Image (cartoon, rainbow, N blue to C red; front, side):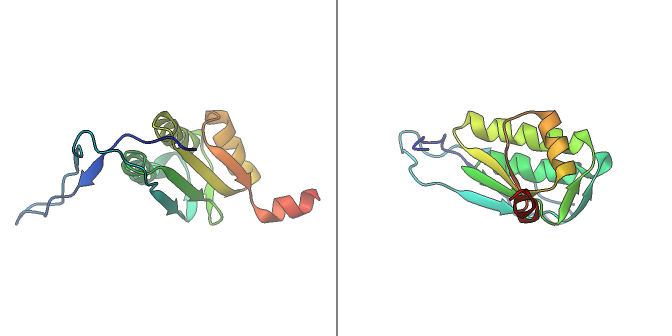
Length: 136
């Protein structure tokens, strides 16, 4: 994994008085400056993610896929219960992979694995420890 990733950063402007939030604006770093460092992010969602619960996960993964080299999604306390949840993760995995990085899902239970596998094969999936012990 010696790939150098595209240089980019995110800038979050301060909210203006009376505004309801902030707007993310992507800014490019100075051209010609090679980036050799990796940025790794770990996400630990909790709860059941069905079709109606994926918008916040998509927003977070979209932001991270724009700047992280490796994203680790720890699904120990989360359950993916819809194909849409798998598609959101697969889309982010494709974006990160396209830039030379990786999305790694750890502690994946069998039902979440089915959602992720049905969506594609760009995310790296690792079973939870209890399943690995049971297989021995």
